[in-house]
Length: 184
Image (cartoon, rainbow, N blue to C red; front, top):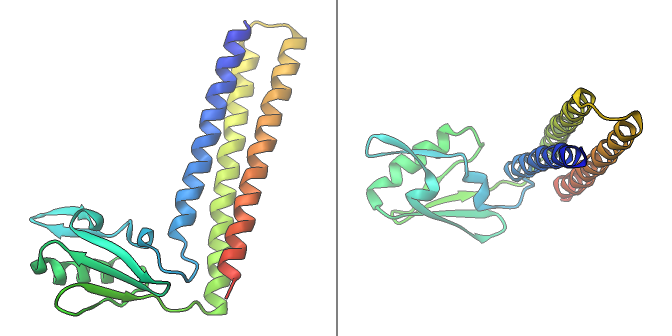
């Protein structure tokens, strides 16, 4: 019986880990005024008739905190890359110098910072909901099992402790992201 309880707890922990990793990926996409190659992770480029991630047709790096440089492996791809970045709704205005595409990351306005904080809070709330759903699923599984009230109570306490730990992790990550966004 205890093995089954452990299995349910492990599955719940995996599910909560998944919610945390999803939150961290979402936070990478929320830019905090500092240039990062991850900002372009969602950009898809038309490459020989198929949509291809930008990172697979060009080298992306950040020469300084306000600039992203995209060096395509084929110069003929420069117009396609520019078009893809413009169409990605990231708010960037790419320029090309014949060799590469340069993106200047503008400093964030106070209003834009507040919007990004709201976006971060929404992502954190989604993560909390996922964690609570994992808790709910675990409790349902535990109640379906044929175990004593004591074992059930202890297992539910373990699930709740796990939930509280992950909710606290979400809060910590959110506070760090908020501070990063609001820092001028």
